[in-house]
Image 1 (spheres, rainbow, N blue to C red):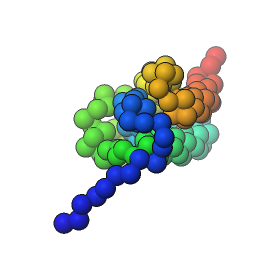
Image 2 (image 1 turned 30 degrees about the vertical axis):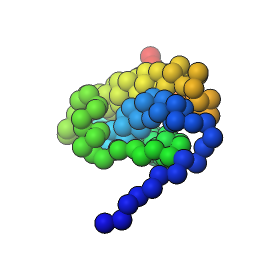
Image 3 (image 1 turned 60 degrees about the vertical axis):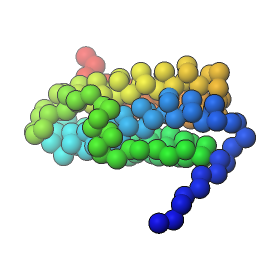
Length: 161
């Protein structure tokens, strides 16, 4: 068996890397869960707004995957591994409100927005926590928050009266 050697790719130091892992790992796991739950909602959405919600959920999924990749790659760039296997996600993420089967578009949107709110709270915690230790990683979290809030707005607009 070969031995793997980790070489840090940054001059920010072990404190910054440790802080980044602490704050960005929940973000990665939440985004991976959002991608899965968003696809579940995408496949099973029903109702009058089907096509617009169906297509928007595909975009939410694509964005969640891209954001998860961005955060995970930041962790790895600092020389530390990330564990985002489905078992790790299931252990760390609370159950979702996304229905297992067919559901009306309003119910799917509410469920996905609820999931997004949880992730946005984790992202805000990362922004706050990384302020003292790693501003580059904080920038990653800020970018993710900006994108999630935009997707949340697009979904929530369907529910506005």
